[in-house]
Length: 76
Image (cartoon, rainbow, N blue to C red; front, side):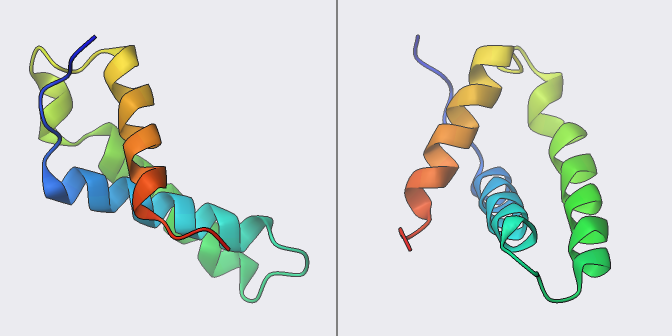
């Protein structure tokens, strides 16, 4: 299924979410409370992004966004 192109800010939000989640999932993360807070903020911004209010806001589009955002991240 082809999706409308994702706005750059939405892709960046998802990439930031992945990066923050990875930092929190690391053994003995530095500042875990701040990371959890940041993850909550990013989750809210992702959830309420205007892109999802249009016809493209399907569950499959959310999966595709996560997949594309992961490809932006360099592998460790």
